[in-house]
Image (tube, rainbow, N blue to C red; front, side, top):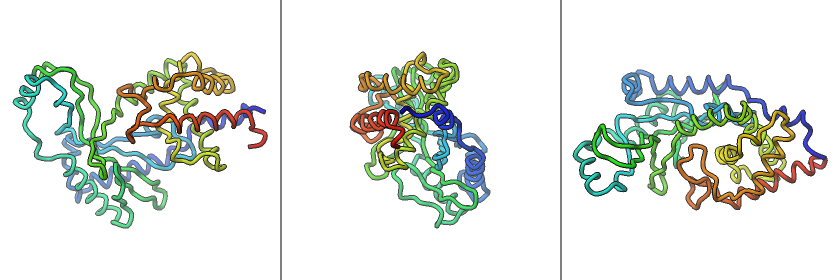
Amino acid sequence: MPIPLSQLQTWSRQGPIASSSTTYQSIRNALEHANSLISEMIRAGSVKVYLQGSYANDTNIRGDSDVDVVVELTDAFHSNKHQLTQPELQLHEQTYSPASYCWDDLRNDVIKALNLYYGEAYVDTSGNKSVKVLPNSGRLRADVVPVVSYRKYYHFNGMYDHSKDVGVSLTHMTKKSRVVNYPEKHYQNGVQKHQGSKNLFKPTVRMMKNAVSYLVDNGTLKKEVTPSYFLQCMVYNVPSDLFDTDLTQTYCNVINHWHGADLSSFTCQHEMHDLFGTDDTYWNEVDALMTLNAIIKLWNEWYTA
């Protein structure tokens, strides 16, 4: 027995956003407080604070709890400058001088601001990528991610003569390796995909995320096997003409496309790198196939679920 249409419709609806808005504003208040060392930088525009993740992309479901807040230093940047030719690299070094305030400084000042505002008991700094603010009295759990602007150069002939893609960068605390992401491209590509699919992309993402949450809740899948970011990227790789106003048809179209596709050709939603790989910034095909098989079984055996 397939999953009833009424269940798919429920799964496709966006989850509540009031608490996420309250949480986001609370984090902003902490960072902009007079005691915050970066408050003036935020007001001057050299540090930007913005939402990322499911709440920013309108793909949050009822099971979502963490609010992702990015704190981006824009007065400095990381880049792939060492992939430029030697003459280009030399010109780049002559054009830009080393920054006096860097990612490490930003992370330390973000932690100080959060500790002063919430108290150290509510701030968890043990994460490799984010600083976690624990929930309390209507405030959701938040992942605050300090980053610095990133430039992926394709050529460099001077400050006003170069081509690049722009993202953000941070340092993995354990591995001490650079992690690069492209949240603006992710967001814009999602908007275009949604419009190109007759506004069906985001409801489909929510439907599939809720299906996975159901499988996690009943013990079929472990939460870490299917991170919501990677699942959304999987849906992004489904051709737009396979999204249908009939959610029953859409569910079948999505899983059939995944089942027959070459997963190695899938990209992240920002399209700057592949979805699958061996680094921890990628997904792996074993977990993806485990997720796919569980979603197929859920459809085929809903009466026993």
